[in-house]
Amino acid sequence: EVQLVESGGGLVQPGGSLRLSCAASGFTFGSYAMSWVRQAPGKGLEWVSIISGSGGSTYYADSVKGRFTISRDNSKNTLYLQMNSLRAEDTAVYYCAKGRYDILTGYTHFDYWGQGTLVTVSS
Amino acid sequence: AIRMTQSPSSLSASTGDRVTITCRASQGISSYLAWYQQKPGKAPKLLIYAASTLQSGVPSRFSGSGSGTDFTLTISCLQSEDFATYYCQQYYSWWTFGQGTKVEIK
Image 1: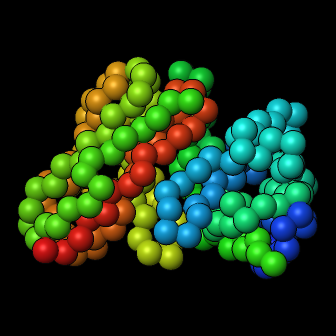
Image 2: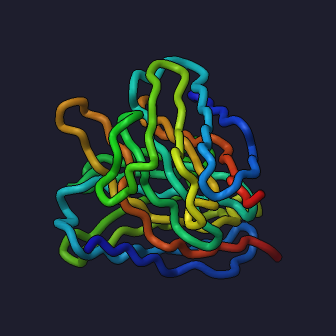
């Protein structure tokens, strides 16, 4: 059974930093791209970042580029999101999601999601 | 960025009803569209991908159709556990979501 468990959320002041973790189990972690998606309180879903299975390729939404860094440790089956220079508008529940790559089309969607961890940016 | 627009934003329905939700992309996305169900305080759950392929374990009362810019999610016979918010997502160019459709009890 695929399980994704996020941790590391909390209250942080504007301009501060936080590192989120996502512990994965139930699948061969290093074989899949992994992503972060966030949801502001009462709002919809926003894709944040994605990393390839090897960790060699990373991509970011414009809203977080230059401030957030995605990484992974395949020996620990863990995904990370380092968040710096946090702003009030970064307040959200952050979900990690497993990528499913369609070898025929070359496109990736997300098939399993964790329960999320809440990040609150406020003074 | 590709914008996804869902309609309606909310709807009220009764158990047993047939429900249809529409999603429109701001440009063609072929069939690279997924549908998710989200209940309050829970993670999104994948229902359909590739516009019409049912995710394993999802009841057959859920179905998806469409290609290009216009897509539909249909619940053929609404059950009590289906009251939730539904999101479409394109994965043709990066990943963007619709604003959600809340299905409420009538």
